[in-house]
Amino acid sequence: MEFANPGFFWLLISIPLIVGWYIWKEKELQGNLTVATLQGFPVPSNSFLPRLRHSGIVLRSLSLVALIIALARPQSSLSWQNTTTEGIDIIIASDISGSMLAEDFKPNRLQAGKNIAIDFIKARPDDRIGLVVFSGESFTQCPLTIDHDVLINMFNGIQNGMIEDGTAIGMGLATAVNRLKDSEAKSKVVILLTDGSNNAGSIPPLTAAEIAKHFNVRVYTVGVGTNGYAPYPVPSPYGGITYQRMPVQIDEATLGKIASTTGGKYFRATNNEKLKAIYEQIDKMEKARIDVTQYRKKTEVFWPFALAALFFLLLEFVLRNTVFKGALT
Image (cartoon, rainbow, N blue to C red; front, side):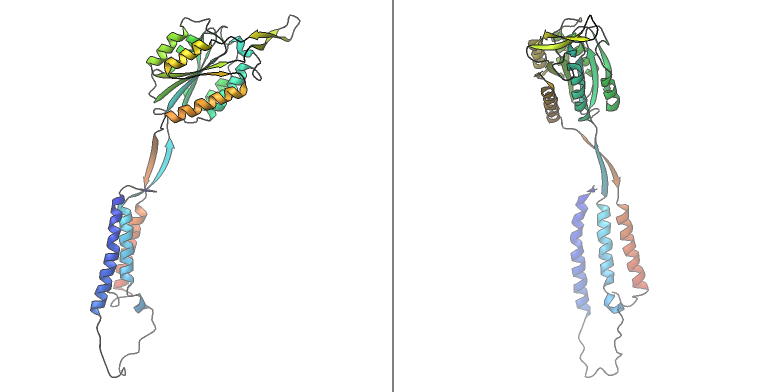
């Protein structure tokens, strides 16, 4: 509970002053009378009514306290966080080229990236997040949304072969930036995952990085792949699948330049655990950057106190003019 006008609580100082004035007045009205005998005077009754002759000041004081609380305007508040326009908008740009099927990650790079990214999404319920996929070209799989159940379903649906093979890093980044350029969020972020070097598309990666910088989009780049060689599944001419050891060739220089140009950071993931740690690190970095605006829905709750003040006043008036008439001061 909060109070809209807490300054009215200073009026509570008047309560002991009023009670003190009442006590002083009572003493002033009392006097002494000396008599030789009590014979002829009525015997005092054992009624409890005379003992309650001070109930009037008690009821008036309670009424004043309740009235002061009502004037202070107590309010109950329901709080929540809304980051749609004031928080962080994130686009995950994921490479789905054929090389992402390499099994140096479990079960492979593409599926490991999907699983860990979905955990990242679940940990950020208040952010708008979208998904861009790229291979030989790029497209938006899911625009920015706060409905993460829809996003996760669409994330689970991505697979190699959806588009022409290749690695169009520049196109993937440009598509992600295009989704963020009109955002009014305080922080606009792209998380770009790839396991190779740019070999397709009409936009060079560093040109896309300059576009991202122009629109204040920060890019975290992640190189996915072990050091050296990785087992890659290929169809066997006799049926089934065989594995070939393929060299891991990640253009780390370009990915690092993209990150530094936009104020982000480059990471290298060589296994599932390191990729998960990278997402956790990005999660902490972005939470540290943004102070989420708090919104409150307030409800006035002064009425019970106002009614209580009226009740005490009416009760004091009724008792003073009926039961305690002549007994109360």
